[in-house]
Length: 255
View (cartoon, helix red, strand yellow):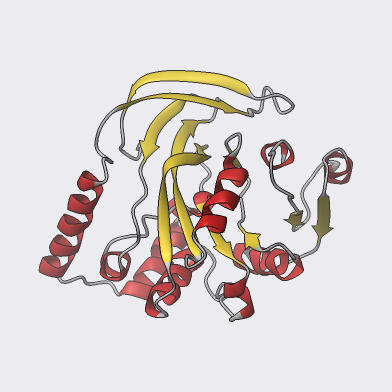
C-alpha cells in the first residue's frame, strides 16, 4: 500500500480488495491517499482481482499481491512509456527478488512471453511488473476465476492468441518478496498446472521451447550478474523506504 501511495508524477487510483483480513485494515487504508477499500468475500485471488479491475477507472491498470511492491517512480515510467507507444497494450518490466527482510536475492530480466514456452514450461512474466491498457478490459480480457493459482498464465495465453501488442522495458519497476508463503509454490498450483498442460510432456518440444527461451534471455542480457540498489518498504519499516545495496547479484530463482 505504501509503495503505491508514494508514487509521483502520475494520478493513481488505488483499489484494495480484501476477503477479511485480521487487524484494522480500515484505519491503515484511510491513512493513505486515494485508497478505496472493499472488504468482501470472494471465490479466490482472480475473482478479487477482477472485482478491483471492474471498479477501476484508470486508463492504465495493474495489480499487486501482498508480497509485492513498486519501486520509486515506477508508475510514472509506465505512464510515459504508454504515452510514447500508443500501439502497445501490455508492458512488462524487470523485477528484483528479495528476502523477507528486503535483502536483494536475484535480478529477473523479463522478455516477451512465448505461447509455446508458456504451454510446455512456465509463465516468465511477473504479474507485479505487468501493466496494461483499460481497453483490454473493455474487450473482456478478465481473469478466468475457475483457476485459483495459474489464472495469470491463462490470461497471457489468451492475450497472445488474440495478437495483443506487448512490449518490455529493461529496468526493474517492482519487487517480489520470497516469504515462503507464495501461492505459486503450493500443491494446488502444481495440480492446476497438470490439469491445464497434461501430466505428460513431449520432451523434445519442451527442450526446444526452453532452449529458445534461454537464448532469447541471453540476448536480452538476463544472465549477467549485477550491482543492485533499491529503496523499498519492509515489515520493520512500513512507513519509510529503506535502501539496500547488493553487489554481484545473480539471475536465478532462489530455491
